[in-house]
Length: 156
Picture 1 (tube, rainbow, N blue to C red):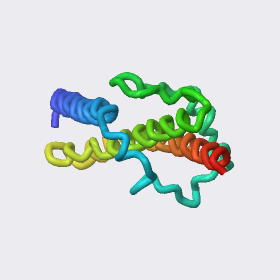
Picture 2 (cartoon, rainbow, N blue to C red; picture 1 turned 180 degrees about the horizontal axis):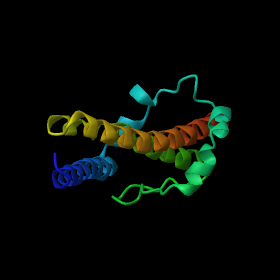
Picture 3 (cartoon, rainbow, N blue to C red; picture 1 turned 180 degrees about the vertical axis):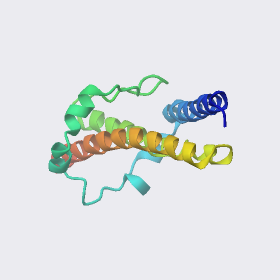
Picture 4 (cartoon, rainbow, N blue to C red; picture 1 turned 90 degrees about the vertical axis):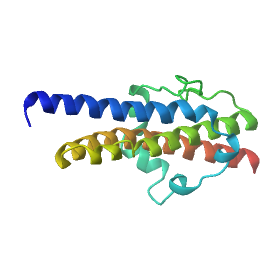
C-alpha cells in the first residue's frame, strides 16, 4: 500500500467514523424519554462505580477540561444542573442516560472498517474510538451516580 493509498484509507475511515458518530448523536434528542427511564444494559452500575473510585482517577478534572457537545443537535448540555427540583433532576438524569447511550453506541462506529481496511488500521481506529468514548462514559457514569444519590436522598 502506497503512502497515498494509506492516507486515502485514513481519510475515508475518519469520514465513516465521524459520520456514524454524528448520526447517533443527531438522532439521540429524538429518542423517546420512555426508553431512558431506567438503567438497562450497559447502564447498570457495577462494583467499580463508586464516587471515591471516580475521584481517584480524576474524573471531575477531566469533566471540566473536555468539551461537552450535548446541545449541538438539539439535546441538553450536561455541564450544569438545569434546576434543583426532583422533576428537574429526574429530567436531567434522563439526559445523562441519553448521553451515555450515545457514547456506548459510538463505541461501535469503527466496526464497518473491518470490511475494507487492513486489520492493523482497523485496530488503530478501534482503539482511538474506544478510548475517546470510554472517557466520556466514565464522566457520565460518575454524574449519573451522583444524580441518583441526590434523587434517592430527596425522595426518602
